[in-house]
Amino acid sequence: MIDWISALFLVFAALFFIGGSVGLLRFPDVYSRLHALTKADNIGLGFIVLALLIQARSWDWALKLLLVWIFVMAASATNAYLIARTALRKDIPVWTPPEQE
Amino acid sequence: MDAAGTGIIDLLLGILMVLLAGASLLLQQLFRSVMAFIGLGLVVAVAWARLGAVDIALAEAMIGSGITGALLLASLSRMARYEGKKSVDPDARAAGAASNRPGNEGRAGPKGIRWRGVTAAAVLVAAMALVFENVFPLPAPDGGIPDLVIRNLPASGVSNPVTAVLLNFRAYDTLLEIGVVLLAVLGMRAVGSHPQFDRSSHPEVVLAGFYRLVLPVLILFSAYMVWVGAKDPGGAFQAAALLAAGGIIGWMTGTNPLARGLPDTGLRMMVSAGFAVFLSLGVLFWIQSGMFLAFAPVTAGWSILAIEVLATISIALSLFVLFLGSSGYPPSARGIGPVPADREGG
Image (tube, each protein chain N blue to C red):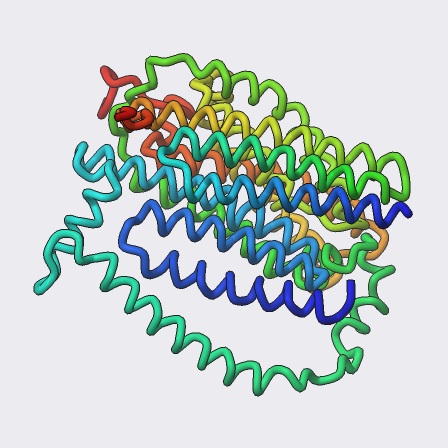
């Protein structure tokens, strides 16, 4: 039973990672790509952690897994901010939707 | 996981490794090469982990990918600053490089590189096939060296076989490795220049927040790495990489963590402490037992711990100083950190 729940979470995680990757490849500018990548990956990793969490053999394992998630989230949020700010400073234009006819 | 599944993962890792290695060598835009190199480090780390070599996986991820990546990026931004605005833009760089080659105009570069990449990949795959042919009937482990290590483990003073090899049985290698790091710092100081430091006018609020969050954890984890190295994966180089990473992030927030409170003499002593103590202990045991670096089993544990702690501090400082150096801010004669423009060349 637990294995199946884990598997389900892992599938969710894969969906979020795929979504993030598609966004990274398909979105029009650096800002929206960053958004897709960091947001979707955080949730994807969250599901992976969740899947492993219910398999954890002891509390310290579970705690470590949670810490991994928290620190990756903090790091990716900081990175996304730094990259976006650098892009803004280098005057990389923000994409605007084309005018409707 | 079943054998087929793990086989596919290993195969993908192998292919990814070759592709990223090729990309880091062949891409014309240096920035992309550096990115490929950082990615390569992470893939190699995963490969080491899958081979069960957790110590090397940690070292590869932290130093091979993390710190080296930071060094390369720092050098890159320094180059951009030296060469002027035009080379800051990677596309401009590539276009410049491509137009320098005869028969290639402007944007023809990427296509040329693709063909070269494909050829290189084909050659590599062929070479790998040859290597696999010879390697894959792996000789059954005859228990030679691993067995020797395990049998002598009690005398080494530690219970992690990797640490036993690195700091006792083959301590000579590690001594020289720490020496190489020291030499790198000496070399950098010898050729050090003092370019301008145009500090960002924008306060790094978000990064500073992140820094406050991770610094205590980095320090704690680094201490844990040194301590746990005696019985589990970990050790001086990994611990030092964590500390150096903390220093680099701190520097990026605009607050050089060592700008105040560390005079140059102190810096020099701390950078060389690991090597000096390692060497002295080696000589001490030489006098005692007639063999260089032959730790006595009784005191080996404490000797190794002392060396690891000091080596951690030395390597961490060295890596941080190397980072400052490659971004163009070597420690000045007045202490570590950026040289004020008005005192340059003084």
